Amino acid sequence: MKVISANLNGIRAAAKKGFFEWMQEESPDVVCIQETKAQLDQLDAPVFSPPGYFRYFFDAEKKGYSGTAIYSKKEPDFITTGLGWDVADTEGRYIQADFGDLSIASLYLPSGSSKDERQLLKMEFLEQMTPLLKEMAQSSRQYIVCGDWNIVHKKIDIKNFNGNKKRSGCLPEERAWLDQLFDEPGTQDSIGLCDAFRELNQEEHQYTWWSNRGQAWANNTGWRIDYQVISPSLAPLLQSTSIYKEQRFSDHAPLIMTYDRDL
Image (cartoon, rainbow, N blue to C red; front, side, top):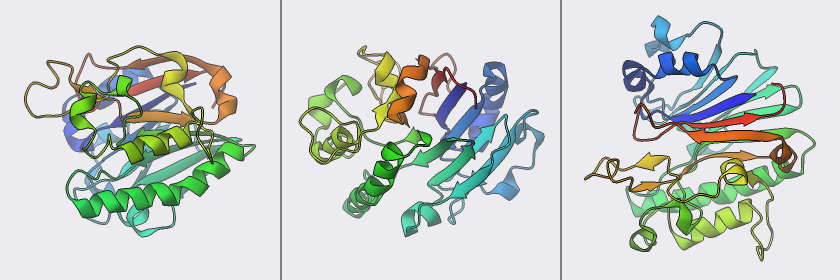
């Protein structure tokens, strides 16, 4: 089973850059998209309905903003949209597809970089997510929560760690929450899910997002903020991982994971 997570920073712009042609060449079982920045009625063109895939969208109420989507080869048993609180639901930040005993979700966690109020909202979002993620970790179901989590975990996950420790996405309290999420040693009240990428790859300079300012892409001055967060029972089934950078569809790069199980 191949699963791709991709923040497209506008699905229409990414389509013009060849995203869907690349997607069909990759032939993933599931693609989780974040930041669609479109309403469903704007996506009638054939390119947005590639043959062989079912598609599901959860749009933000505000046009041209946020939004998540899932494309899958197999028709899901059930689709869930939203998480039950305002920002998650009005901004289209979570959509989940259920396939038998497996749930795959696309999550677009808020950024706090624009202003202090958004950072407070981001921290509230993490607090509200915590019990839901604990339920996932303890469930007999298997979960893959793909998406742009807008937080780097450790120093290895960002090019300029010291220069960004006071910036949203690299704040100590955000990284401590990921310690809790991934059950780092010494963490109290841990959640116990797994960072699928780091289960297989411990190398430096593995980034999924680069600022459009300066020469960030050219200099690989990046951040690893896109994840596939998985149930512990899925960790032994991981086969391979890669970050696709040969083509640029947005300021993020697609994260590809393969699993030794069927959809």
